[in-house]
View 1 (tube, rainbow, N blue to C red):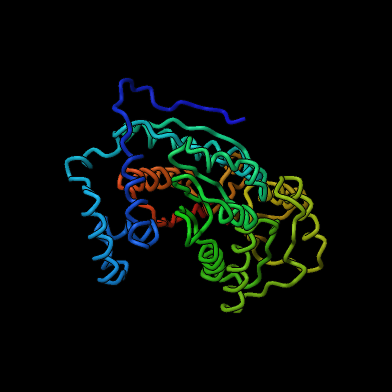
View 2 (cartoon, rainbow, N blue to C red):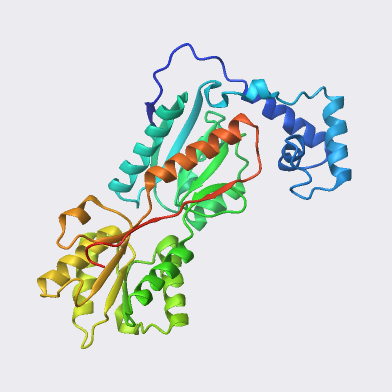
Length: 355
């Protein structure tokens, strides 16, 4: 069951007018013999930019005029964020940590307040790979937009198999060319972390973390690829695959690494909770951090600031990611944009402490 949380307290908001405009664009597309995305692009004056042929653009506009289509004026779009209540469902991957969820929702609330938006949000947790359990969210027409955090390949295949009922879908923390998305370039992050070790003249590193999920697997790939390019040694025994993402998983992987005859100069940890476990294991074994081993973690956790030394991290500012997601969705809703839009979130590097 979806838990509904009403964000906006503003009363007597004007009725939403989005529905009729979207239906009209769809009808224009059908009569023109083009996709709804193509029709929307042309009607929003982006045909040349998106390299749609002149013939197709002319056909769309002729059809639109025959149907008495009237584009929005500037005045109608002015103050666009306040044009009626929008209903959004946030489908949250149950694998993600509570801390991550808290920071993301803090960003959602702050963005809504700052822009005086009229949003009603619902939250539901889904198990990775089992998004199909929420088919009605996409087909019922109940929601204007749906955020999906870290969908797996199986989840995307499910979305591809259905026809969402005029629902604007936005992926959070997953890249896509078919759906709008707000994401981190994990290959680039992994490469940059390798560059950071190299820039500090460290030439042997290890990696600890679970790669069962797509994002950390891609992150590790980018890291190891860049290490190879830079000539940084990363022995097989220094690459520890954790069974899960918990503190205890990180602790056990840390102990396994410490059993090796030779240790690397640095460690890259793929997950925040695992990083806490690794730090505990290293400290218990008397390792001097960062003088003997430097530790750099991906993610952020309140526990980082409580550890000695503080855990250096690549912080994906979830509040910023939430702001990008809300802004992107509202822009699409208010302008009837049906083609996908992507936004890349740049992480914040906090290199004090363990690095």
